[in-house]
Amino acid sequence: MAYYRTMAAEALELAKAAGDEALKASYVDIAARWDMLAKEVERRSARQPDKAHHSNSESDPQSNGERH
Image (cartoon, rainbow, N blue to C red):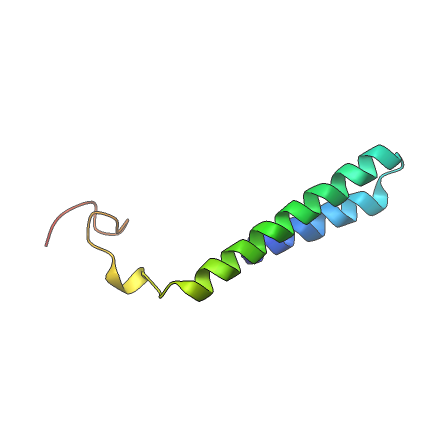
């Protein structure tokens, strides 16, 4: 989710630098969408337990798909 927050911040910086009002509004909209994504990830993370400890070897990129 940090990635989404970073992208939102970058879009806001681009909005500040934009000379054209329509372009500025577009960047602000993009920033709001990145922020919504970050909030959605936070919401989903809060609802679901950590699945990293329950992954099988097929979904583990370190295992090369081998069953143990």
